[in-house]
Image 1 (cartoon, rainbow, N blue to C red):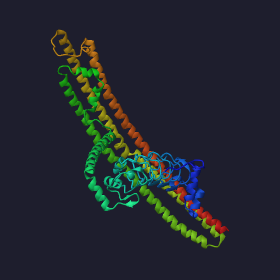
Image 2: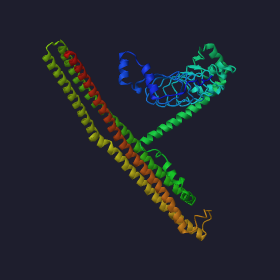
Image 3: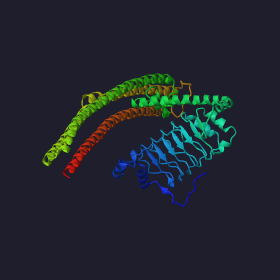
Image 4: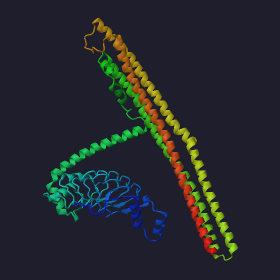
Length: 521
């Protein structure tokens, strides 16, 4: 069932092997020869064939980031690995190898066709990320449990499945079971599933399938609810107000507050805590609502900013295209005139004029690019950015400071009341006027009470301070990161544009130089 190590030494997937394969499988005509001379970039390769190479381990494929089809069949590969960067892969053939476990496919979200035929696999697993999977070939393996079929129900696009040559195919009603649990399947073991087989499957397993569908529906509902909650949480994080739409911060203040929890059993403190909690939550809700509104304003402002940038770039590019079109029209006429001219001095004069025109075009295009750079810098540093983005965050920080100050004021007021009640309770205990049972270790003397109330107060203030510092730090970090990213993107755009201009000008000049050499000959 598995590939046997032959007399040839196991090979490693190194750069030499990859370059050779890419070169041999690339275009062979003139364009292909030119590509070989200049060097083929691995990131531009769409299909790669590495079958019958005696490869033991998958490696060095990280540069093939745009690869669509990868053929690794008929090797001696033992593990599926090294495919993390091949996120554009659509077709993968790992048949006729020595693979025991399905793994290493978590990033291949675009994979549609997977062949693991003739390996040593005993369990169908770790395919969850392959949401687009249509064809799965697992014939001639060691799969022997029908539970594997139920696992495949999650792949809604799966239409072709091959399991022939596995122990599972010897099970009673093998085909009917698969047709029942995978009703959307069209081909099984290289044969089309007919309507009669589907009818038999539906009849025999109807009640079992109905129960399974109910369970799947319940799981799906819970999953969607969890995803919705997570999406909401991410939105709140983007607004810097997560967990401020309830009592989370208040509850966290008492999570590690042992003294405060003991003091809550004092007379009247329960009512005091309820009032404190309600007021505290209202303050948190105010900053939560304000933060969400500011987040929407920021998103709108950023969208407007990016639209303005794109409009400026588009307008600049259109101006460049007009300049190039005008140049090319004139340049083609000049080249025709040079070819028709027989007088050598006249040819030289026209070639010089053409060269000057090329230089002039270069200067015009570079001037346009510099104007765009300056224009975009003004958009970043000018009123649009300074007045609306940075101050919006500053107002958010200021509001946060004021809100947290209100939380501290509430805590201070609660602390004073709690201390007053605690000392009063101690005095009643000393006088024997209190019948309730209270913690013996707490009501020893006045110093113990004051220290306990103070420790509780310190914990609460620390929680408030930490939350304030965390949010302000994240707000400032987000702003810095955003500005850095915008500048970085602009630098990359500028470099790309300058490279395009230089390449075009070099091509025009090279064409003119070749014409000059031909005419001189």
